[in-house]
Amino acid sequence: MPPTGGAEALPPTYVFEDLRGVLLDHVLRADLMLTGLAINSLLFAATAISLPRSPRRRKRSAISWVDCGPT
Figure 1 (cartoon, rainbow, N blue to C red):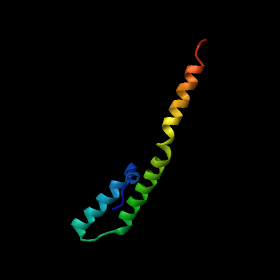
Figure 2 (spheres, rainbow, N blue to C red):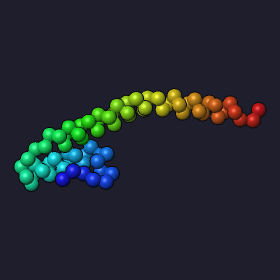
Figure 3 (tube, rainbow, N blue to C red):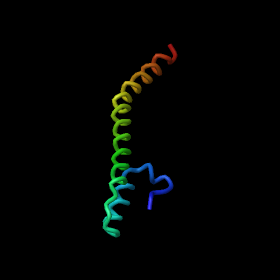
Figure 4 (cartoon, rainbow, N blue to C red):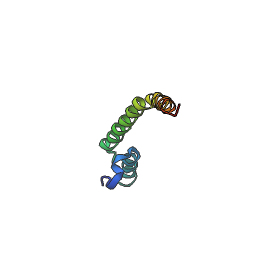
């Protein structure tokens, strides 16, 4: 049974569904595990790209906020 609703965006959903299939049907579905791995990889890459940029953005906005104040 494939995940429905907003759950298909969460990697643990695919792992849970696959392990449930192993316990109940004794069938390992590699496609579910690979889908979870792909989503995890995308989330990790997005975090690795955006996280280092966030402190620079905050510093820049804080400095511009201070510079725009009354003189």
